Image 1 (cartoon, rainbow, N blue to C red):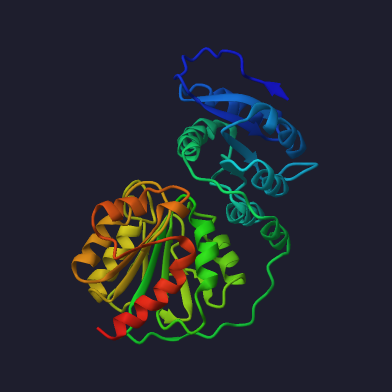
Image 2: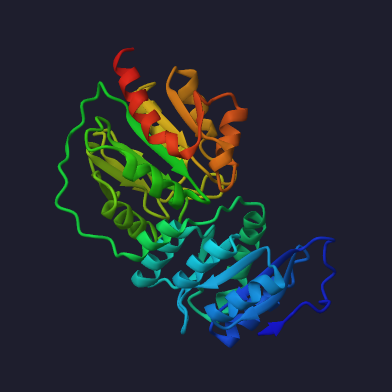
Length: 365
């Protein structure tokens, strides 16, 4: 362990975010620490070379945020994360490889309670850009709400996902509304709770926009598919809206509907600094179906979704915003609420039932 609590060259703010860096690579520990310490609002107070060392240091150093490598010897990132979330719950940001296996493990980490992640740079020359992203996410994470992960859930998460039989889908009866779920930081954990709670009898198609870079959304869709009775897939051009199916916007692409009411993907400029953006998809749906859309805005930083939700609400459509008490980051739902665009404000565990109720209500209007 390297103790880095000595006064750095950079003049620090009065209360910088205290960070513990956990990575098995000595170079990465040094590079991450050096780059993060250049930010006056961040103080790297120590490093650990593996999970066991990290678990020993956490009660001693009391970091506010932990950066955690997914792939490590002795005690890997996922196992370490489980222990942290059970014994020392606090914000954790994963440092993930861009491999398919790394993406799948990162998604599982987000389900286990990690706040966010960044992808490891392809080469050492890209590390400064990655650390700028890491610094931004550390500051958001420091303000996030983190709850202990129950032991029974920890045990359940150890079991690998089981293969599901082919799930039936059927044409969309347009008298029913389309469901659009939008989320950002903390979203995978929210989706992990809400999507599996949606029943096979749900009479509306579902679309999801989760702020996430390319390479990770497919793993998220696959993970949700294994634990849900609905079919969950990463959206592809030409996908129709089907009952029994959930379409997840792929990272790096905005998702809209074309003239044939099929999925079209584009790489037009980012909106609110993100692509995919909730507002792009939600606005496309409202233009196509008017008020016959149900929007659900979950945890996340910023205001993405507010414009589309306000438009939908003004037309008499239904908007559900996640309650502050269950948000990891109360940003997007707060923006919707403050804009006066929320029809309901509900904690996460009540949202799936609220979606069913809103569908039934729409059929009587």
